[in-house]
Each structure stands twice: as structure tokens, then as C-alpha cells.
Picture 1 (cartoon, one colour):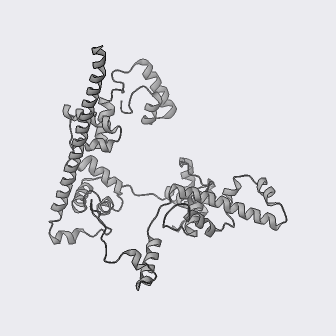
Picture 2 (tube, helix red, strand yellow):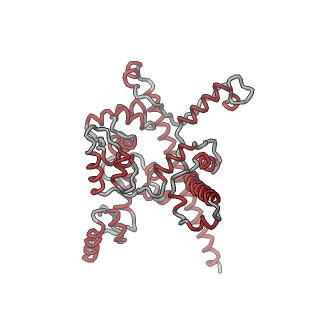
Picture 3 (spheres, one colour):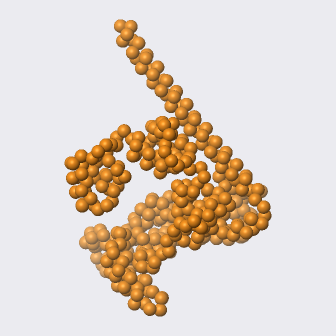
Amino acid sequence: MADSDSDPIKEIAQKTLQANKNHQYALKVYTERLEAELATVDKLLTSADWDEQEEEADLDAGGFVLIPGSVKPSGPVAHSELLSKDSPFLEDASRRQRYLELTTIHPMKNKELDALAEAVRTENYRMHAYEAQRRGQNALTSLNQQPQSYFEINKEGIDWDRVASKVSSSILSSVQRSAKECEIRWLGDRHPEINHERWSDTEIAQAKALAANYTDGRVNWVKVAEQLGTNRTPMDCMRNVVPRKIHTWTNEADERLLEAVKIYGIDNWLLVAQYVSEDATAQQCQNRYNRTLSPDLVRGPWTEEEDNKLRRAVEAFGNSWLEVAACIPGRSNEQCRDRWSERLNPKVTKGKWTNEEDRRLLETVERVGEKWKEVSDSLGSGRTDKM
């Protein structure tokens, strides 16, 4: 009886001990993060000591710099007070407010996009019912005679002011959508007839042939889209026909990237990209630095201590590789992901491939091609895309 009573107590004690270890590890993770943030501050302070000549020569990319932990400046008078009816600055403040509303980009949220589609349908219902009544017909009967797709496909006669009003009231936001904004978004992107499928090689060749007919270099992309006849937008045609310069990393580009990071830090990748090259993107620069050039990167074989840290981090954060990498100084999220997937994950099949696995691999590659992630998922045998 005593033994049976002690088992639950022992189990509770073990769980408590394990929970304590987990909390200790979490605290260690947070401590390492704080140390990393302090190191970032030290780098910023070091870069602030540059002489004025270097700053005048290099700080010419424009834009703005984001400093981690910074707060927006506040003036002696609140913005709401400037816009109050009795404010002596009301006219100027209102003009500035209109300017900000017209120049600040506010991407449409999913709820707004749903409201846009619903508003277009409602507007088409209203127009069709009105026309039916004007002809002396029963509005409800006339509406039922039309296929449901018609009320989204029709583009003619839509009152975009009504649509904009419905979209603007769909979410609790100060952003007011204009009629022209809604019209452009619907007709240029969200209309159900627009073809968003991947472009085929044949389609690209046809679009290039149509654009080549304009020998003066002034291509009528609206006409090209119409002649192509695959429901592509003019902008989409231009994107797939006009060759885009692709940034390639050279020793010189790497040097400029390191210079840019020294100037702007690691939280201002848009400015870094502008400094590196007109063809480089912010994402390219961030990836190149974090995966290849960062002096904090650790290369070479993993140590047993690093493997143990990785196991504990995956246990704590799962496949959130950015969180996992924060627990292992010097290792990138890609390094952590690859190490776990290829070596440490107990669910991954290791060892020599069997004849049956070889046969299934060949069949899958024949079916889906050399898309190794898709091949790995299709096999479902615990083999990764790099095995």
C-alpha cells in the first residue's frame, strides 16, 4: 500500500523537476537574447563614433533609419488638438492630414478584400434590379434569371463611390478607401476573370512576340493583354516580357554590403539594398549577410554542446527556426533547420536506401520532376529532400 502511494508522489516530483529545468532553460534563452541585444547596442554606439567626412560621403541613399527600441518623437501639442475645430492651425493641419492619407500606403486587409467583393456583388444586384423595374419587369424574377457569377463578372455601370463606402466601413479603421482605389484593386487584381496561374513558356513566348511588333519601344500593354487572350492584366504582361536585371553577388558587391551594414546596421535592409546596387532587394541583402557574411556566423562541424542546445530548443519552440537559432549563438536558422532535419530528428529515416525505396523514388521523380521537397513529401518515408 505504501509503495502504491509513493508512485504518484514520485511521478509528481519528477514532473516538478522537469518543469523547473524547462523554466531554467527558458530563462537562459531570454538572458542570451538580452545579451545579443546589448551587443547590437554596442555596435550602434561604435558606428556613431565615425567622423563627419565618412558620414557625408556615405549617407546619401535617402529614406529613413529604424533604430531598435526607438520611440516616435512627440510635440508640445497633441495631433488631435491641432485638428480640433477651435485650433488656429486647423487649415494647415487638415492639409497635412490629407497629404498623409493620400501618400501613405495602407494595404487592404483580407476583411476589406472580402468586403470589396461583396460590395461589387451588391452594386450589381442594385443596378440589375433597377434596370428590371425601369423596364416594367419583376426585379426578383429578373435577378433569379441571372447566373450568380454575373454579379461579380459585370464591370459596367458600377458606382465605385458606393463600393468604397461599404469597404471603408467594413473595419474599425481611420483609413478611408477611395472610389478609384477600389476600382483599380478590383479590375486590376481581384476580378474573378483575371488569370493568376503560373505563366507557361508558350504564353511568355506569345506575349514577347506581340510586344516585338512595337518597334519604337512604346509598347501598348493593354493591347498586348487583349491580343494574348489569356485574361492577363497589362501589368502582368509587362512583368513577364520586359527582362529584369538579376542581382548577382560578387566580391565587390559583398564589400559594399558590409560597408552598408556598417553604416545602416542590420535593421534597415531597404537602405542597405539601395547602397549595394539598384538591382539588389532588401531580402537578398538580408539573406546574403545573415547566411554568408555575418562575422557572428559559426561555420564548420557542430559540437556536441550545440547539438544538445538544438535538441532543447526544438523541444521548446518546435519548428520556429528563428526562435531556435536565437538559442544557439553563431548558427543561422537555416543551419539549425538543416542540422535537425538531416542529423538529429529521430523521425528521419537514416541508413542505406532499400530497393523498394529506390523504386518509389524513381516513380515519384518521373511523376513530379526534380522538385525534391515535393518528392520527399510524396514518399512519406522519413527521407528529407537532401537525402
